[in-house]
Image (cartoon, rainbow, N blue to C red):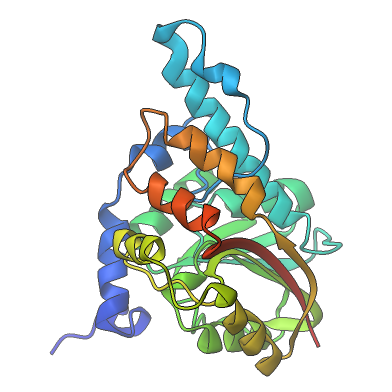
Length: 284
């Protein structure tokens, strides 16, 4: 039997299925938005929508809509990075589940620090490394075919780390144990994630639709705080972004980039079963 690198990185059949999905994914809502400025985010947006993009000449409507959705997604990334703490150029940080590299590149642009992105999608890793090369920052921003649950990076080597809409693909107990291992004492962990509302009860029908669409498992809100506490990650900021993300979904649902999952997100947010949170925590 031949053992490949993938056998060491992908620890289960489920992870292999996720890797296969993202290795072949070419969704226009991810690619067209990234083409606006070369920053490929792969997450959702926050903030007030400029609804005028739906008006005006039909022949330029798609371009206006694409730029507006990208602006909202960029605002989300900026909001996450605002919570990483006082980073300096000599610091090292990690983007767990780095996708096509958008957040990592923005972090380096803002702070000048070294960034390591990890993904179980070899296609995404290759794409992101090419973006770093094109921007001339491949000496500072590197992407790796590694598992966020077992990165192999040195213990205590990071000043900050984050997950941007990637926690629903892993067990939180294992994820937060790895972040806690990697972070220096006093280092900062941040995530933005969709979670189901414990007060609602069990996951709603809309959340089940989202899970099926993305082959993921949305966690309850309580699990984030339980597993952070168990792994020496103490929240310093919790921001409910639910109301801030609804306009993004309302706009996306009306555009050529809609994927068919928009109504499930809107139903889940509006009926109170789903929440969009930022959680920032210090490693103690």
